[in-house]
Structure formats: C-alpha cells, structure tokens
Amino acid sequence: MTETALKSWAEAAPRLIAVASGREAADMVIRQGVWVNVQSRELLPNHDLAIADGRIAYVGPDAGHCTGPETQVIEAKGRYMLPGLCDGHMHIESGMLTPAEFARAVIPHGTTTMFTDPHEIANVMGLAGVRLMHDEAMLQPVNIFTQMPSCAPSAPGLETTGVELGPDDVAEAMGWPGIVGLGEMMNFPGVIAGDRKMLAEMAATQAAGKVVGGHYASPDLGPPFHAYAAGGPADDHEGTAEDDAIARVRQGMRAMLRLGSAWYDVERQITAVTERGLDPRNFILCTDDCHSGTLVNEGHMNRVVRHAIACGCDPLVALQMATVNTASHFGLERELGSIAPGRRADVILSSDLRELPIEVVIARGQVVAEDGQIAVDCPHLEWPDAARSSVNLGKTLTAADFEIAAPSGANHVRAKVIGVVENQAPTKALSAELPVADGLVEATGEVCQIALVERHRGTGGVVNAFVQGFGYSGPMAMASTVAHDSHHMIVVGTSREDMALAANRLGEVGGGVVLFADGEEQALVELPIAGLMSDDKAERVAAKAEALGAAMRKAGCTLNNAYMQHSLLALVVIPELRISDKGLVDVRTFELVPVIEEVLE
Image 1 (cartoon, rainbow, N blue to C red):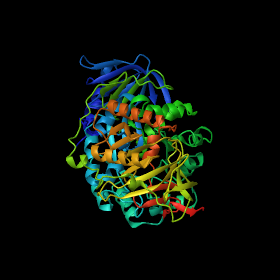
Image 2 (image 1 turned 180 degrees about the vertical axis):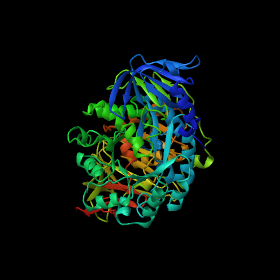
Image 3 (image 1 turned 180 degrees about the horizontal axis):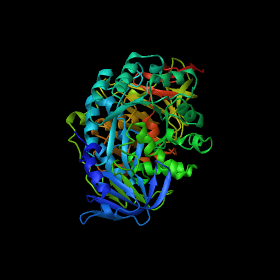
Image 4 (image 1 turned 90 degrees about the vertical axis):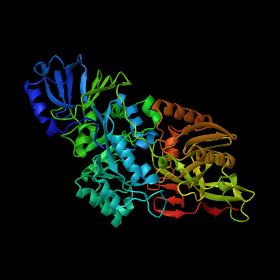
C-alpha cells in the first residue's frame, strides 16, 4: 500500500521550483490570506499561497506569477491560512470507527495528520490486525501514520491478550511504509526493570531511526521515572499535573497534553508554558482519545486547540503544539506541520484564530472539506471474516457467573473497590463495607459489581469485583467488548441477571456496547470488527453512542463521558486498581490482590 497520489519532495522539486519562479502555473493558488507562520510564530497578512503536485511551492505577497488559466484560485478574503492540524497520539479504535470512517469524521474539523497506535486491535488480532489498520490508513486522502504497538499484553503475567507481540513483530513492522515509530511503551515497570523483550523492541525501533512512544503512568518522578527516560521513550502523554510536564521536558522528552472525550489533562499542565515560561516547542497537543459522539458533535484537534487557548495559551503557541511541534517530534518537520515550501499542502482557512471555525480544509493540495462537509471519498478495505468473528464466550452466561461468594458464616465484609475518577484515566483503590445475603456479597449504595468476561479463547471465564463512581441505580448492566487493553469484555451492573443478558447480547452481535435495565435492552452500539470498531458511517455510530449515553444517564450515571471510563477499567498499567482476566490488579505494586479484604462479622 502507498499513500494516495503524493510525490515525494525530491520527485516534486523540479515543478515546485518552476512554479515558485513563475516558469509554470500552480495547480491551486489561495489569495490574500493571513499566513499563520508556525515556524516564526508570526501572523503575516496579505499573502498568497501556491500549490503544485500536492505540495507548497510558494508563499509570498503575490502569487500572480504562479497563476495560469487552469489554476484553481481560492479567495481567502483575509481569512487565516494555517497548517492542517496534527494529533500526536491517538487510537483510532477508540472512536468506534475504522480508519476510513475516522478520517471521514475528522477531516471537516481540520485534522489532516494523525499519529496512531492500533494497540487495541493488536491485542485482539496481533500483527495481522495492525497490518489491516496500517493498510486502510495508507489509502486515505490525509496523513495517517502508524506506530507499531509495543505492549500486547501491556502487563505480562497480569492479563491474557488474544495474541502476543514481540521484538520480531516490531522489527518486521518497521519496514512497512506507513510505520513512523513504536507505540506507547506501557510496560513501564518492565523498562525500569530492564526487561529484555521491552528493550529489544525499543532497540529495533531506534535501529530503524524511528521514534519510541512513551507511557509513564505513575506519579513517582524519582529514580523510576529517570530509569524509564533512560530506556528510550521520547514522549509521554500520561501527565496530569504541571510537575509531570516539566519533568518530562527537562529529561528531553516531549510532553503530550491530552484532551479526549474523558481525559482533561491540558489545563493542569499547560501552565508549565503559560506561567512557568518553559519552551513551548517541547509540548504537543493530542486527544488520546475521542469517541464518535465527540468527533461528530464537538470536534477533534480543533477542539483541543480551542481548549488550550481558553486555558490561557497564546493562539500561535497552541497552534504550534498541534502542528509543527508534532511534525518535528516524529522527524517530519520538512514534510508537514507548517505552511512552507516543499511541505504537504495541508491548509485550513479560518476566520477566527481563537474560536477556530474550520471553513475550508485542503489536504495534499485538494479541497477535502468545506463548511463542515466532507468533499472526498475515504476508501475502505474489505475486512476479513477473521476480524468479524472475535467474540467467543464459550458458553451462555447466567446470573450465577456473576456471583461473588462470601467467606463462610460472614454477614458483612470489607471489599476492595475500584474508584472511578471523573475526567481522568487513573482510578482510586477504595474499600467498602458490603452486606452478605445467602452466602453472596452484594453491591449496595454507590457500589456496583464489575466483571471481566474472557472473550478471546472461549474459556467461559468470569472475574468479579466491585466498582464505585458511576452512580447507577435500579436493576441494570452495561457491557463492552472495548476493554483496554486486553479487550475482553467489561460488564458493570447492579443486577446479575442483567449482567448476563448484556454479556450474551454482545456475544450474539459480535461485539460492541450494550445497556440493559429491568431485563430489557435500552441501547446497543454494534462494533463487529474485532469487537472494537464499526465500518458504518460516523454519524450513525455517533447517534447510537448518544443513545447509549442517554440510557446511562437514565440509569443514574452522571459522569462526563462515562463510557470511556468504563472501557478503561481493565487497563492494568494505569494506577491504582483494575480488573483483568486473572483477577483484581493493584497497579501500584503490579500484584493480583483479593477482592475480599476481611470479614467484619
């Protein structure tokens, strides 16, 4: 697979020179706009932009010498001409969409470049799944670069994935045309301990001259953090406070500040630039991640840039963090991220630099969206049957599969409880006093049951525990085969009967998210591709996701984007407490721990 219709700079250079000098006419000229120069951090009014062979040939006060009778002329009329936006870290699967449909959803919002880590499908389908994501990405009219997933499983010994990846897989992928580096190195304890497999994956990436992505999900900025940085990760997006951002850039890493559907980590870290005065070129904005509802209704990287500006960041600095900084980090500054000669002609026209309305989007010299409407096709792959048959429960589940037996003779117990934290990825390790009825521990009050249902090998295994923070009331259950990162099935509920109904329903439809209440299905989002994605249109998927959100609120949930919180409850590399197919995991110590702490009477 090769990127659609784009010559390399070297191949295009003869024509770019001819156009810039006036010997040949440009394919497109944008006239009389304000040049947003992210290289020099300047606003330069009354400039023209000439494009040839999908690349920028000339930017100056008058492109009349580049304009011929066949040149497409776009009148900027004083609007800002800014580079297409780049997302520095994301997982397409979290949008519930395939690469083609994800591109179709974000192009009208001005995103023309994405650096994606398909480790969700890697956990389900291995290298074959990564290749499918890579190949469909390469077909798109915008730039979708792939980082080879590094950690499947993310925490060896604490979870079981559908397929495991290793250094040989990484080395093979480094030769694919769209691979730009190694995906986030989530096994930070392994790096700190000098795990040979993790070091070999990073070595293979560095030998290929590509970037190692980071993921240090710990508040400890002492020797463990320094050991992790010494291992080779070049960036990190897991910071949640100003000190996190500062520590990373001081150690030569790029601090990636994320605003996704549920993670709001920009405001607490951008003060490192706005108040502490650190060099902003070492900071990158990203989403990590947005689901389909956010993409359709609120935006993508334009939403992140607007938020950074609202947090006090200078608009030009915020734009640098979403364009040239990102390109530079991945070694692509001479290829994209700015409006300058030779770069890919990825350009946005906008009438307001703060509110950032996306009025025209140009990618590789082609108008791809205008006034919020897509103007190009986003080609699909033919996804194989193996990708559409990934949910294997092994049996029909019943309410008994979701029982938590109490110690003999107990009337009350103290149990460990996963505490959901609104708008953040980390959880809290809580405990609660819970009653026992008929020998079973019962969820009560704010505490719900949570279960991890094995779905890769059909073992019929179910691990049960407790969670707090969703606010559900009345008999209900929600199940999802999006369960970062091992992607088994997470079921949260107040009724064991509804938990069984929800789990079995996802087995029937081949994956997705479903909510039952009082024994009746209330909302369903089908995700038949690897149990993670739909190849339906983004608008239809978003509508189903919105209906799911409404059903969650009707069931008592008040959390912002609670679905995203639900889907991360099995992510055993982010503190403090998680669930896996092996049991309850204390991520502070990376140990399996019992659900029941003690018998109270």
